[in-house]
Figure 1 (cartoon, rainbow, N blue to C red):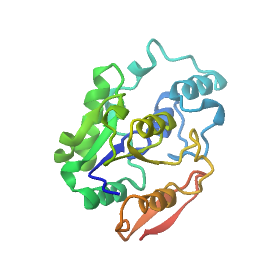
Figure 2 (figure 1 turned 180 degrees about the vertical axis):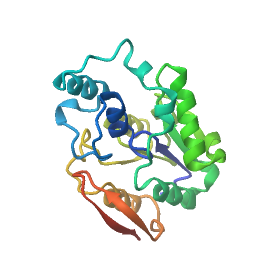
Figure 3 (figure 1 turned 90 degrees about the vertical axis):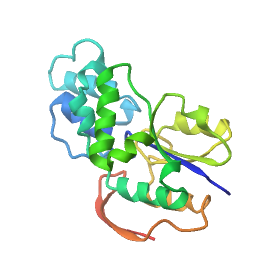
Figure 4 (figure 1 turned 90 degrees about the horizontal axis):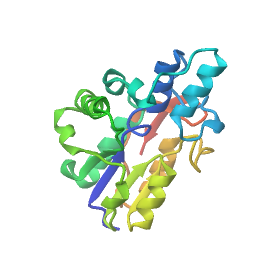
Length: 218
């Protein structure tokens, strides 16, 4: 299969958005991992924050939930352990100019600015020109394009529109029982590319059950 462009989701793929924002808005200091994410929250960070603040006896956040996610919060979400590895693999496979970062924005300017700030600080200034903000990721689908995303809805829509996909295991999607997101990505990668993913050691690869360890990407 000839994949010519790769689209990488930002939140909860390149950066650990949900656990970090949860901590910021609830005032907790949980480990930045996904092992403690409750199934009842699904893919709703709003529900997770509201539920936990209620259980802790804290007041609910005022107004529009997303107004509480400031530009500074957006800009300072930590990378996922496999962020650099995944970007490097994509760049090697199709070239820098054909790798794009896709992410759905909120309706507030802090989100737009904060996401751009994150890309510049974490990946470098050149990458901000590869940033695409849209909720309609499936509009970019075609037979030579690959989307790597954690949202089952985005994956299904991209496939239905004729694109190719790799799902990243998270507690809210059908791969919630996958022990390691990296292993699944590596497995699916072979469906699209003859060359294996780059061989280098990634420290502290996260797993969906919160365990960490050393992993070599071959």
